[in-house]
Length: 79
Image (cartoon, rainbow, N blue to C red; front, side, top):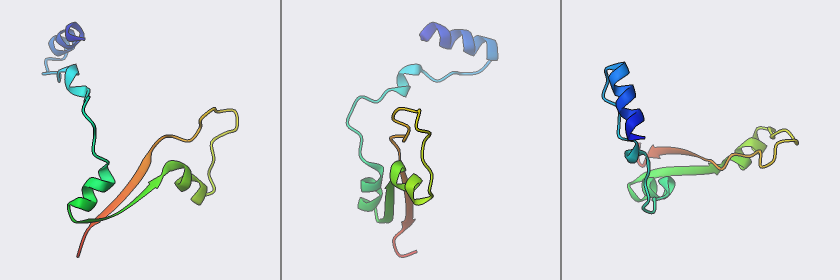
């Protein structure tokens, strides 16, 4: 990966971020929980629930067609 970074940086004439910065091995804080603890009003909706709300579904031939995503909406409390 480091070699690729050097080649791309040289060819593009740009500084390319270190690939090791893309991995994060520590436990992550849930974004909705973090926002709530910092004074935000938050709603978090799993993708399957959101898709159902809009009458959408993945094609039957796709195994595990619902992405493992949560859609977060937040507004600063009191605003």
